[in-house]
Amino acid sequence: MAKVRGLLVWIASLAVLLLLPGLFDSVLSLSILNQMGITIIFALSYNMLLGQGGMLSFGHAVYFGLGGFMAVHSLNYIEAEVFSLPVILLPLIGGLFGLLFAVFIGSFSTRRAGTVFAMISLGIGEMIAACSLIFVGFFGGEEGISGDRTMAPEFFGFDFAQDLEVYYLIAGWVFVATLLMYLFSQTPAGRIANAVRDNPERAEFIGYSQRMVRFISFCGAGFFAGVAGGLFAINYEILTEENLNAITSGNVLLMTYIGGTGVFVGPIVGAVLLTLLQTVLSNYTELWQLYVGLLFVATVMFMPAGLTGVLMIHTVAWKNGRLRQLILPYITVGVPAFVLLCAIVGLLEMLQFYRHGVVGEHEMTLFFVSVDTSSVWPWIVTLLIAATAGYLVKALTPRLLSAWASANAPLERAKT
Image (cartoon, rainbow, N blue to C red; front, side):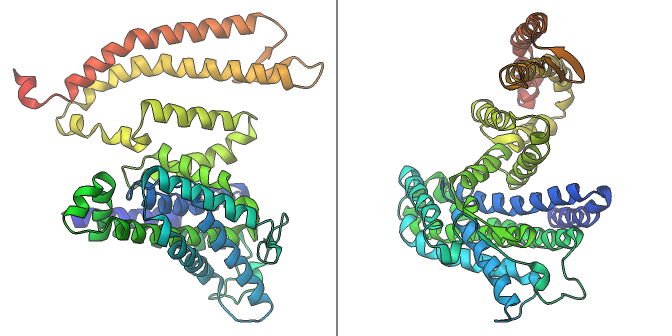
């Protein structure tokens, strides 16, 4: 029964990928979907390190960028008729190139874990980023390397000149790569990686090499990161130093952690959310990076298991049939919490407009309402709303905690 249910989930996922473009007919929507697909593979590859293997890396963008650069060079080689290869196989070249460097770097970096591994990854990431500005022949310097995907041979009549064709190429690789990474997590190698993550000494005691287990996960993560880099090269047709520096590594860390490292779909949720914040929210506010940082801090402080982890902790209440007991407490706390969040955002946006707006302009639109930032009243009203909502959240939280304890109590205790 479980296998049938799992098969249905994968079939439904494939159907969603195939039907999703029909819901969005704009070029911008397709561009966002393409970026989501790339970041999903990238985030899942990072989760092979952090979530499954317990390896915190600050340089995972190295394999993403190197795979992308090799894919762009392959495009140029195809255009120069050095060899012939369909575009659909270029992500595989990127993956193999990422795997090659993962084998080399992992041969010494996976000997240690924890802080030592994190510092090694940071050093390697900074070194490769610096090399991208030195070895201009391969990396192209500050201008990067560009290519033309339409110069490759057609694949069953498709030349991938249209964004829709590129979407289905990315969607196909997303499905295949996600399936392969999930299957890896179910293999003995993936299971023992979890054991090494949780208790490396005990795993060593029963006969498994910590280093070899980490090395296997590291190589797999490098391969799929290279695949994501190859898809990036196909989609954008250009790679620069930004694709392998610390900022890109930090972004994938945010995606994975915010989504949740303890659940396989966690990085997918994080990749979708962060992509929307970067592409959609950035069109409405200049403070979107601040909001991403606040979201990450809030996740670390209040949701260490990530967004998907918050959903998973409701499993006990759901199995006990008491999930409905949490609906009213969630609403009573959630409404003032949402109001508090809106008030904080309003204060930040007004402060941003007041300090950096056009000289002489004081009117701004905040939540579809015109606000005069030169007047003291909008500030006072927003502060009062924030204070009132904050007080209500603090006052109602104990009731929510009591309802939570009751909903998750063992059935035997509830009967007594």
